[in-house]
Structures are given as structure tokens and as C-alpha cells.
Image (tube, rainbow, N blue to C red; front, side):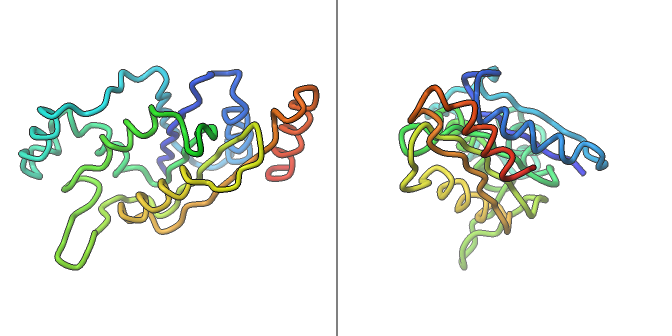
Length: 186
């Protein structure tokens, strides 16, 4: 099984979200899993330019299988399972994840637009979304967006793993993070 980890933890190893999903990985380490980690904070991601959008849209499906502009989309499509790690920022997630998802959303690679709606082309049937927040989350808008987009790609199930209130009392941040991780993974 190929597991694609999309890490949008721009604070690196200081990220509570990174510690959270790393603990999950420890629980599955004995399984036969090929892990591919994409650290978005280290990727040279830029929003698509007008020229890139026109280029991507003009490529045939066969050309999209080879062109560099579709590399992220092909890698995403071919994964057996997806793990997104994104801290809760500004009611959503860090902008690097949005830029990445724009590049993944490629007609003819991750989905098709048909007369009756969208047809997903992705191999994965399950995704996990890990997030941590400093305060109380009243709406998981980033997760809701990712879940809807993944459904368009053919991913039937997306699970939310969330730990909140980490910054309400800075002296208890470590305690709250540990308790949250233990709640999910013992």
C-alpha cells in the first residue's frame, strides 16, 4: 500500500500537528506500507499563473501523464491512501495546502467533469486529515473543503483527527497535546 502524506506543518518539528500524525504512523509501522512524504514547507509551490492554467488545460490526457505540471496530480491519484496534516489557521489551513490542492485538481488526472457531475479518478478510497488548533474550533472549514474536494476525486471517506485548545493555557500545551494524541492512539 502507498500512503501519501501531505504535510502542511510550516512550523516544522515544532508543529503539534506533525507530532500528532507522527504518532499515528507509529501505530501502523508494522503494516506493509510504502510512505511518501511531501513536506509542503520545503516544496517550491507557487500559485498557478494564467499561462500555467492555459497550458495544463490545453494538454491532452496522454500529455498530462508525462508533463511536469501534472506531477503532483499523478502522485496524488496513484496513492492508495492519503494523509493530510494541516494546522488550523484562519478558519482553514496554511496557504501552501491550497496551492498544492490547486495543482492536484487536474481534469483528466484526478477527476473528470461529465454531463452528470464529477467522476473521481483517484485510487485512494480513504483519507485522514490531522489538525491541531490553539483555541476552540467552531467550524472545520478547511477540513470540509478538503473532504468535498477529495469526494470529487473519488475518495469516498475522509476522517477528521483534531486536537483543540492547545494555546488557551500555554503552560498546559504539552499536556493537552499528549492527552489528545493518547485519546486517539493510546
